[in-house]
Amino acid sequence: MEKDNSLKIEVLIKEKDDKYSISSPKEIKFVMHYIAEKGNRVALYYGNENDFILTTLLAVDDSGMWLEQSPNETDNRRIIESNKLIFVSSHLQIKVQFVVNQAGNAMYQGRPAFYLPLPDSLYRLQRREYYRLTTPIANPLRCIVARKPSPNIKPREFIIMDISCGGVGLICMETDTELIPGLSYSDCQIELPEIGTIRGTIEVKNLIIMNSKSGGEHKRAGCEFKDLDGASIILLQRYITNMQRTKTIT
Image 1 (cartoon, rainbow, N blue to C red):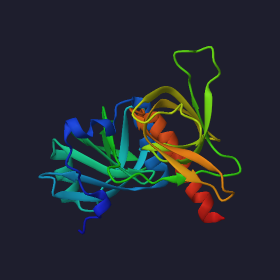
Image 2: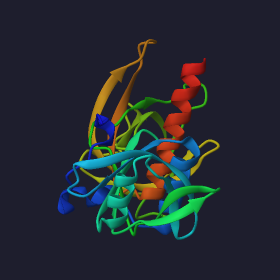
Image 3: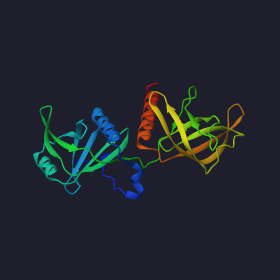
Image 4: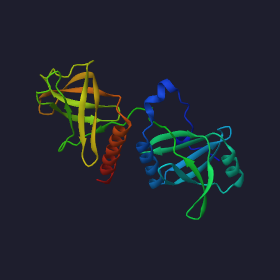
């Protein structure tokens, strides 16, 4: 069977890849439900990790999930006998990978299936450069940055020029020196229409003067998200995917 490159096993390095790990049971179930609902392909590796089947995630409950079995009974037997199974699929175009120790035989809606426990953690692996979305001009996103150490002063709002799961580009007035390259700003908040609100820390990486078509000047602050949690990443990726779909339709 030819292996889909998008479903190949990723070699994980703990110190490097832990930032891609999700350990919240609620988030794990959310990801698994999405894969099941969308019918995304799943590669289930077993044996020496060179053997695999392409299957489908049928359903998910609070403790485990059902996978469609292979028409090849030898494959099914070897999967049941294996003490290490690697699950590879995709969530919002990002590779998902995790390990479970064992699968059991089960029935799902009258058909033979594998039943696997939900993992304690999973990896959403997006090592490539993040897709950067240019935000709408008519109704732009805004990043609310708290003013510290003066909590009584109204937070500053910056228009977001572009956004990705890695960071944001913020528009500042040419004379604005509040955002300083090299500094981090905590308690930042971005409301994603019809999706939810994400909160986190941004670090300003650069500040570039840009000329507008009208001849005016403004600054673009290139900012990186620092330690954005898994739930916020999922919300942001969902927003970006929805906007991409809207652009394609229009």
